[in-house]
Length: 519
Image 1 (cartoon, rainbow, N blue to C red):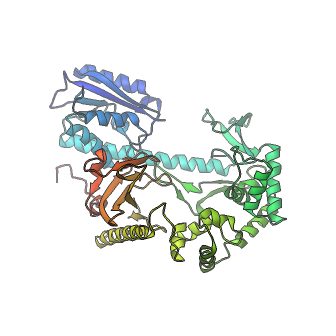
Image 2: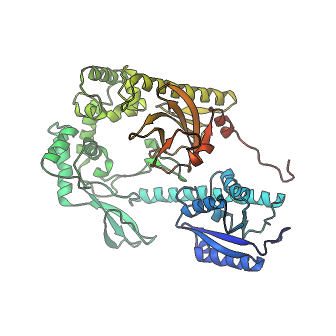
Image 3: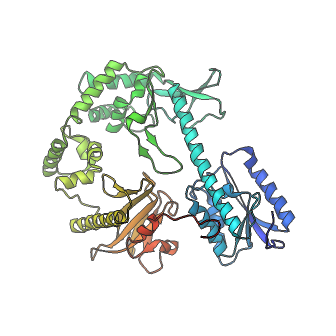
């Protein structure tokens, strides 16, 4: 490896990462390779950042790399070079630009990233830039191909009757078996196999739980007892669910509707690949294996329960269930999803969410406006209108330049060209906990879009103020950030602030890869 600039005499930090790759990528081997390179080039290693057992697909959950990038951007750091074993250890990001972005952050702060085991130079020339781009693309493609192979393998195991999930559910238990079929024993909650060739099967669990599952089916099919009454009856008897807590109607519904209780192993109902968000798959794409394990109830009883359940909601048209909702909101003292579930003549709240995208959309269809946690109805209505206008304006701008855009049922999320997922939300400036006016932002835990667009709105004047566009990985999932409205008080979040949604057009543009000769 040659270079036009020498690294001799410089101080360096080393970054090592290992997920579940081959032994060649063990942290010890990476350290040794980096140490040999440093000795050969006359570099002194003064700091180490290590992410052990961490995936390289995203920056999230890689605290060492996050800390490294943070330290690089501080005014004083003790190193001017970052040594990484090869490009794949820096990451296997699905977006080639994300690789370059983090490396550029280091270079902008005067810190050079050097890949010790790669055959291209570190002088920043055209050849090195081209080779790095190719290597980055290959690293990302490796993750995609590996994800596909793992998924196909899991589906084949599921077809053979082996369990691929975690806890199987109430009345069932997981059993660990060796590759030759020898039973090793049951797996407790949150326990996993430790040998790759071992397999997991499902069998009936505690006899009391099995008897209770069958009793639930008898109550529902033979006695006509609804899910809410069954849950209340069990709680009244002092019988707890598998987690030691009280029963709720949805848990009863899950028992009455899941085919695992007739011995059918179903896998891949949902999909989540390469740290993207979960999404439901159509039933035609599920992996199914009937009679994979002993049934707790017979098929005739299960089908009878299905007939009772579908007769209550699925045979009703959208107009009919909206009519019932309209009558309910006029007469009910309290209008909530819980109150809807408690009313025997009403479909479940999840039915409205499934049919119309969200319970809020169903409310809007019948002209009902719920109270929004102390925010006036006028402000709530204005916020929804502002959000709708923002989404519509963005879609119009994207389609005008040739993009294909799909919108979710709840009209808060769009997918651009089947690749880029953008979620929109409104955040009001309010007073929280007797403090000054603040606004809050939280990365959605039930989905993982590529960008979260926050339309910030002043609740007093009821007008949009500005936009924050947060890329995936910029906010810790599930954490509620409470920010002041003073200028600059957002700290590092200020870089995500924009005057309008036109930035989304730039983010959706496709960039051409530069040719080798720089064209």
